[in-house]
Length: 529
Image 1 (cartoon, rainbow, N blue to C red):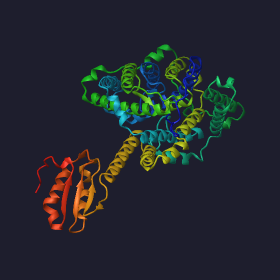
Image 2 (image 1 turned 90 degrees about the vertical axis):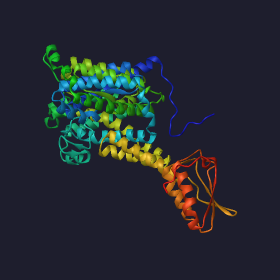
Image 3 (image 1 turned 90 degrees about the horizontal axis):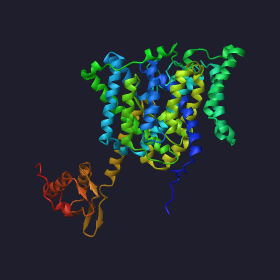
């Protein structure tokens, strides 16, 4: 009977259909509340119309939610693409030409899925994926503290360390605003945190029927209304500290706000370059998020990566055609989805439907929501992603796991998600090479009348210097046996170097070499001498 790893909890049992539906609906409400300001903030940070962010969120929830094979990931406009979108719109000249690039990026993703390129995610080590989750959690906390304080000029969803909008960074932004706290916003955030913590710990089943996040948001709206009447100095009145959904006067106004791709730009080479860039970056972010969310899934289900590329491609085609931003699977909303107790992909679909109906029917009510209320929800999400228990687990796993994990986190916090993952991956590869170098050969052992130098199972050109160093350090007159009987691969460079040492250098040093193993029976590469 196998034992469950202490650091990996056993998968939880599936819920009944009714229980699953209620949990999915509650999670869908939470994700909707988190996604709404993120869709708007990412559009603002990208230099695109606000409606384009909402369209992307709706398409990501409904279209990708239906097509995807992932149970818990949520798709929408991604903070990691804001810089690319901003630069691409400027390079192409019009937002409509950029929309064409989004459509073409979707087509490329469909092709990537058909070619089964989603398996690339299997090459990312667990330590890096866990570092990515913790890094995202820390970034969420750092970026939401100013919103909780009630004084932040940076758009929601901008997760870059250096903030172009105010030339501050994640840490200086917090320090700067310690003296600029808005009491009402801070009170709303603290009240929201208290409600969320209470809702999570309460044993009263009747309360669990209503999502705690919805109660926290309604409480924020109510408190702010009370402040306006009883304590005007505490009231949150600045539009930049409230949700800002566009409010057209009528349905015709909504139709005018939509943009269409500029099809005449299809012959523009720059459009294709932008499309390829979006497809590659969005696909990598999606696959990384997919892997990370599968690790968070209480039931430990596996999401088909190639199907996800197809779903993302379909979503980007639809989003581009309707005037929306490019989309990816996104870890902030996905993490909120998992933490809210979602069980199936229905929660992602529900969040998309709620975005659609609420934006169309009650935009004025949505604009009453203080960002500090939403900050409370995201602070809880960030804390759960960056749980200190994860640090302990990775420490117990050893240095080869802990150091790449820490390097990934630090790089992400001080740069961005993709750079963090790339640096963490490079660091892991360096560790693997170092371990391989250490175990490629054993220290010489004295046996009778000779010194035994035993080669490891896999010896590459990187080990050549160590092998020659060991041979060159032998005392004069030593008989050396180089044993490769346990080696299944020895690089031809190493074989050539050994034979070259025996022919040209051993005699000068008074050494004799004997080779054991079939690897030495094959003809060596031509000597350079």
